[in-house]
Amino acid sequence: MEAAAKVGRLTRSSLQAASCPAVNGGVVVFFAAVVAGALVSASWMSTGARVTSIPMIATRNMAQHAAASPEPEPTLPRLGNLAPPPRQPPPPAPAPAPDAAAAASPSSSCPAYFRWIHEDLRPWRDAGITREAVDGAARRYGAKFRVTVVAGRLHVARYGRCFQTRDVFTQWGVLQLLRRYQGRVPDLDLMFDCQDLPVVNAGNRRGRTSSSPPPLFGYCGSEPTLDIAFPDWSFWGWPELNIKPWETLRGEIADGNAAVNWTGRAPYAYWKGNPTVGADRRNLLRCNASGKRDWNARIYEQDWRKEVRDGFRESDLAKQCTHRYKIYIEGRGWSVSEKYILACDSVALIVRPRYHDFFSRGLMPLQHYWPIPGGGRGMCRSIKFAVDWGNAHADKVLPTINPSHFVMNVTPAEKL
Image 1 (cartoon, rainbow, N blue to C red):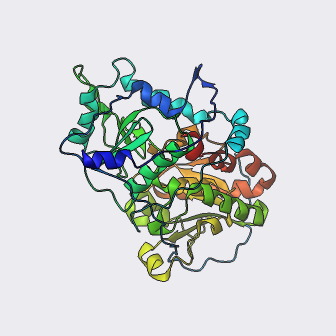
Image 2: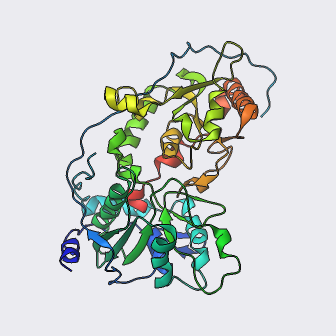
Image 3: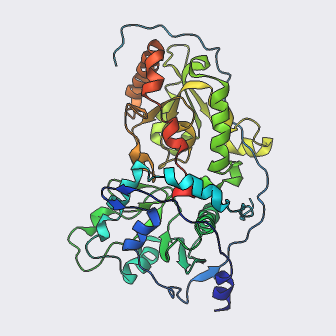
């Protein structure tokens, strides 16, 4: 009880929430939608759960680099007949002044991707969420931590370890929410996983009527799973890789976009990342330029160990918007790189994804991105075709296919 009392004193915050017009006919705010189905309880903590507070000290400065062969000087392609750690987060930033928040509220509205909240909560629409179902997320699916908000205070129970500081920065995001919207966040009881892949298989529900599936939050979902997508930890920072909070980084990326317009960028498709975490990424390496064939792709391997040793000198995400086209491709699962790629004011080439995060289902093909099929030479040919067509229709492609404005307005700190 002493530990719980400490946690109870941990957090208080300020600011009212911006109003959100209806999506599909009803007023929808993310946490209100969650609470509509979620169990509200002030005494959830079991004797086996270790309840802890969240320490707050400044994160250390870090940065990034990538092992890559030199890129050839850009030349226009031939155009033919084409058709379409510390484990502690930084100290809390001061809450915005009420006047500033009030000025911003009238124009605030729920983003289009909020409509997916209803789909994510559909398994519990009829029967609701039971205490048994919530507890089952830890017993049956290995939930790593539990976040409970009671009367505006945050409580955390840890059941397992998360990679690096994923759990700390996710909890930090909830703290920021409480700070920003004091008195507006309802009581919550949320179970979290922190792995790369969703784990609650929807197929397990067939024929079962006696119990509800566990409402488990994670960083991504998929068609055959029931995990509820929550903003990933990197929105609030990833100090191990020197990735700044999204609120800061998106401004730096916007400045980089303004420095070099689209036609002044290298006329190729660019990707840099870890190719060892998925078959599609290994196949993407075959699309790199070689002495035999140029698929209009410039692919670079990211060696994070070298980055750490060298002080992250060459992996500043704000300086990687130098190509007309950026490739997004999943690794083992969904990748946090998605938002940084989409923000580049480049044409996004998205290799057929299997997973979604909390906002990506709002992306529309040929409006926000150019779809690329996965696997083999078909992927390389599709990349080459997209680049050739875009370079031949430079006056049309960027105004038509540009995700930058969409992702720049993904702001969990404001509209979580």
